[in-house]
Image (cartoon, rainbow, N blue to C red; front, side):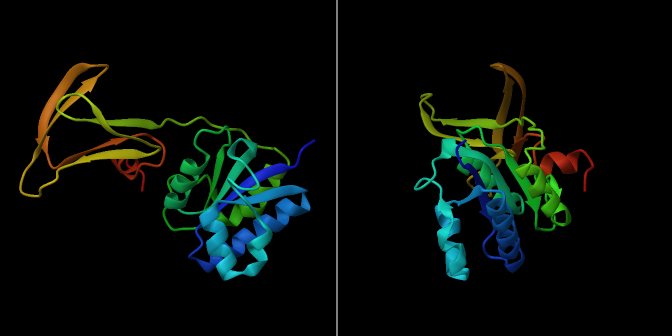
Length: 201
């Protein structure tokens, strides 16, 4: 059986997440799993502690299709970065909230050790989440920009003195039109706008 590769994505600018990364890496190695960092995390964390230097690097010693799972230590921004890193693979993302407000994280920091143990034991279920596909077209209909979003995408005006006119369509059928300063299109996954509109604080 090949070595298990677990991506660890870390908010490297905080001492508590760096310490949490040490604990996660020790637990993975004790279970004969291979911890992996994204290149930017590897560089940042090695600068903080040279002991991180022997952690495998995604895209170098480990390829994206070899990842079993990503463990994320940080807030929503770090989880969104992890989702971008594993996009295109089958690796699920487990968010451990090390911040204050975290709509995306499933686990609080106090339950981190138990969560890592369950990852090691493969004692978890994967929940599918919606994402948004975003295409920007010009007046001639040509696509000028494409991206995706796990939580939300915004349409905003370029000039603060003017409003934008929005036509909302579903499946190509016009539903409504209105003038506004901007619009948020969101999924239930971690969108601040979605959660606040649903009364979640």
